[in-house]
Amino acid sequence: MARNTEFATVEGWKQSGVVTKKVWHINPGACPICIPLDGKTVSLTKEYSPNLPSGSTLETKVSAPPAHPNCGCFVLPITITKQQQMINMKKKEDELEKVIQENKDKTDKNIKEIKENAKNVIEKEVGNLRDINKN
Ligand SMILES: [Zn+2]
Image (cartoon, rainbow, N blue to C red; front, side):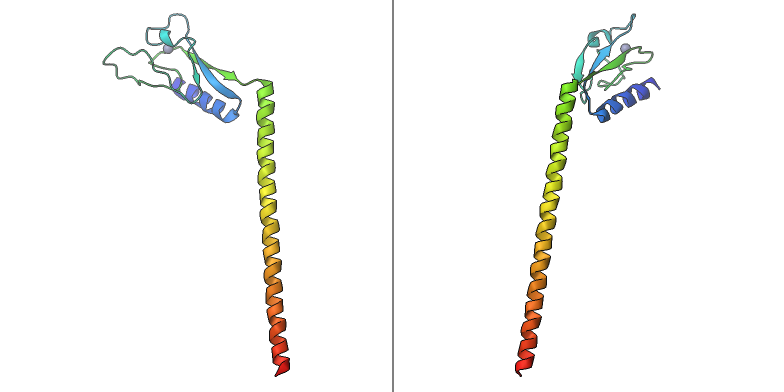
């Protein structure tokens, strides 16, 4: 249950687009498995390696606590600054603008092609009619 909750939390951070890293925090009384992870900051997509005793059947890599049954650890997010958020938003806006412009260019090109094709067809038909009238 706790695993699912923490995992869902990390997934939510990924989707938020404003969280870049996560920090592992232990509670008082943490065990040797988790103590080395205290304060450890990793990229949101990276996994932690709990300090498992040899022969342990627990997961060797976890994206968030718990690292073991009754683990009281938790993770906290590190978010990007407001300024970085603004820069990212501007970047997205520019990308969107580019896509719109590209689509517009494509549409303009298509319209031009359709017009040229129509012109060719008409000219050909007119030519055919002339030929018919000549005979
Ligand atoms: Zn723990």
